[in-house]
Image (cartoon, rainbow over all chains, first blue to last red; front, side):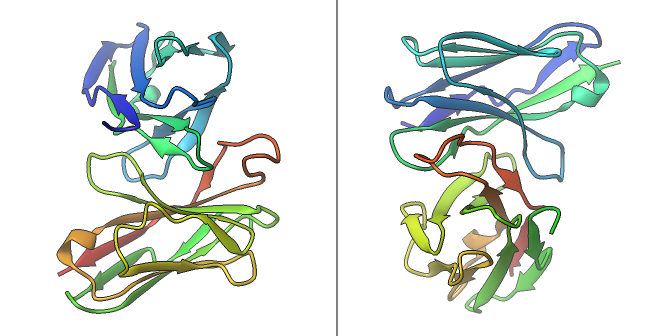
Length: 110
Length: 118
């Protein structure tokens, strides 16, 4: 089983809608969770981090963590065409490194 | 430098050749990571350095792959006897802290080295 699993998409939403991206992880001792955004042909960049159960909001982005269900999600409100990218879920399991999921490709349609 | 610098940006080589990929992290960053990314996939962990030592090299696929960071700054990923399956974008990232020191997970990535093995 992979450490981090994501639906590869593609996910298409109209401009202004809410985009919902989901991720599950396998290691129950994981404590740190991240969402990275990767534009086509570019390298990943961090957009959100979350460490405790519940919601964390930053502008139009909300990360949600449920450790009991081993589930992390990212909501993007008022989606813009510039949000079109691949979103990578990343987890720090018991070891000292960071594992990425395969990413979900999001397209926001103007 | 201002960001993570990787060279070369593109490398085309023939099967069986030796390749070196270089990463110059952000000044002062103690942790350095190597990942590789194939088309349509997420970054695959290869190796992670704390200072000069490899803290975790469990992601290196086989003994053809080796990485060093002799002075705790610049790192070189070395691939011997390249195979077509080694073709990918090799990403280097650095972070200010490593696990146990504080905040962890904010990795700053370079633009990658695209390796093509013919």
